Image 1 (cartoon, rainbow, N blue to C red):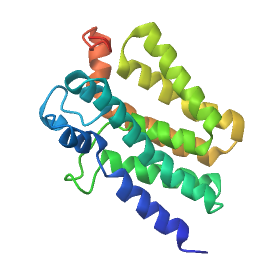
Image 2: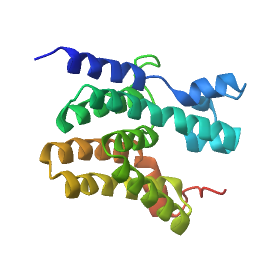
Image 3: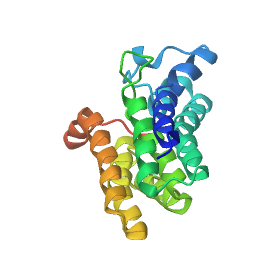
Length: 196
């Protein structure tokens, strides 16, 4: 078998390890996201102290980390099973960045990029789910938890691939693990609103 899929997995991890939140904050002369607010290097934290432009750029950057490697995999003609491995590698890079002491963000934006790369229609269905939940509850973390829980099942309904389902469920489990404190805050009624 060609080495290209294995090299793409490594490339995806290295690209995924780049923190858009940290880079955008530096470029815009904003505080390091790891030192302010929730201390999470992600778009929601950047939004609260850096404004909409910085947050949108962060969201776009983190999404591209998941999207681009998967699109390259498509160009190489890789199977869905390889594509999800590439996506997982990018996702793990975001969570456990080789450039930042194996620490990183919570992975939602990168997961969205992966979903769009795997199947744009399903990816945008996941985004629509997030937006609907955000409109209903006004809580970013809860919206992300709902959307990423449903995402693997959306994909399974269309592809009927058990390996794809398992791979995407792995991403969901890590997202839930990274949102432990948010889940507790949601249960306690103390989680921040998006518009706060």
